[in-house]
Length: 375
Image (cartoon, rainbow, N blue to C red; front, side, top):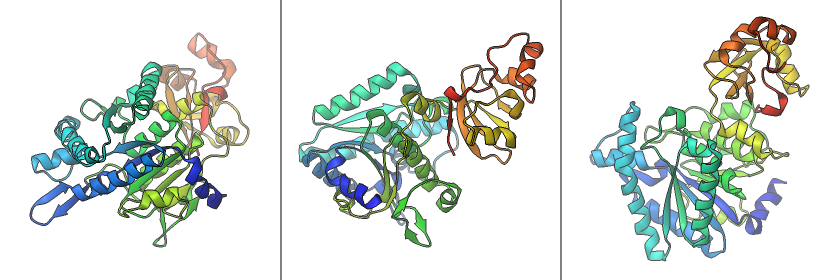
């Protein structure tokens, strides 16, 4: 199946999302600091232009705004305060886009900048508007270049990282393939890239290691999260080295480049995807072993009796994660009761809800129809 799927990329992958990380777009010169690398931009532009000339449609998700801002300021690592990060992004975004324009203009290729926040993806009207904008740019023959709107995004409305954003964009436009270009050749096992990952389980996550570089915000862990997100919508993901000058052509010719993350066998319905991946969790419910088994094996709803602990503050209808006692996430869902109510009824039978609260919405804390298993 993986070999056949790779071969299908030759003709079947018409609509692509390509994500490029900050580390690919920058270089260091001893004694002079870090700079945007014109050679890297040209390499990306040449490959993307060639794909479009083949008749493929491409959306480019590009990191680099804050890195470009740091270079404008002559600074090093990213600052800790979000207001400073926003300022760096504001300084760097036009610098980043100017580099893209300089490499695509000689090829006769127009570029369009699209800045997105998490809030744009959770709001149905903005979600549809973002999709229409991206598809309209493609129809005009332009290349959409997407980045998170770091200049205004605070924690509550941030997507989080551009790996996640690229997967959200792939789901938004219903792409055929997500390609994440990075500085390594894929998910490494014993020093060599794994050719294919069928399921992102605990062992795979352990292989991913820690966070990304000081100039970026990702790492292999966020790439796994992106692959899981895209895969839930039936979209395969390839993580490969962007250092290779013809990596995109090789991937689209069916060559074994990087690590292929297979999509889920059953594609999530759009509402389930919205619950699992677009809604930002406002808290967590820690459940006992019986509830965990009922959710994972029995296909049941989460009842108050199975809840050991309620974390965070949230209202009825907001998203939460459902976790085991060791912290492992097993599901996400929309709650039927607020955090204050759940703290009062946790561990109790459903028939006691009205007696404790004075009212009852439902017997469930999280109904199965409003829940997605994520492990």
